[in-house]
Image (cartoon, rainbow, N blue to C red; front, side):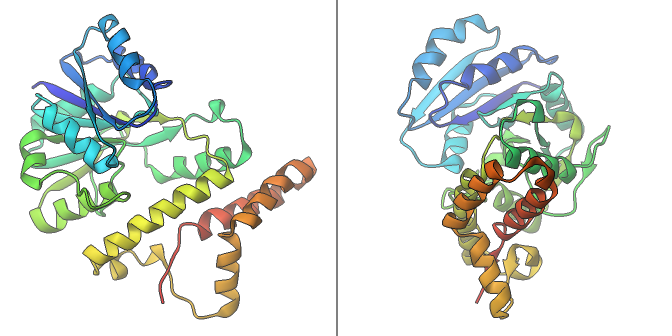
Length: 301
């Protein structure tokens, strides 16, 4: 069974060779790479064309106008030739066994999607908030030595695989969404089409998520817009994913939520992280926890 690795990318010419280098170290060799360039303004295409000859696997660069991750993944899948489609993001390193586990999984599991973790290498992180977030992310994933069936609809879009025939039958990712397209993909697969979703820790990729508080805040703003769009499409999610939403009418709770999601307050927090002495590490960690939690809520009237 041959596989196609699809990498959507936007303005990551400075990083794209790192993921290609990690793919060169794979134990499984029968794959092609399709890099879907989503309207990048940098030199991504030139970097790929200049360097692709040094790799033993075929590399195809697909260029199209900017349309977001869902559209970039779909454009890449359309150009791919493999029986199995593997989606990795452009800002990660793929562990040497990942592609092998993805491809072998689909030899034994029909009508299924395989999902893997995106871990964060804390040794590469420079700011304290990113290290705090990395510890939370590591707790999201249960270490396994086999593929296990999942119960919910969570899907890590930076590390999934699916048979081409199944992907085409689903119609690909929902291009109406600028965020949350991976969750919607799993929700649609499981609730409407009876497709099984598995998780295998052994397929992990290492993510370079070095976001500071302000970058995290802006990223969550975009994610919450995606959640709002998801609610429009699937109102039943309001009940299913209640932890996404903040519904309290208590004015103190609401005021606290708004404060922790205020950019001025977050800038002040960044300043405090430099000014507060080292012995106040615990205070800073509690503040980071409050900010992290508050920015994952979507307020519902």
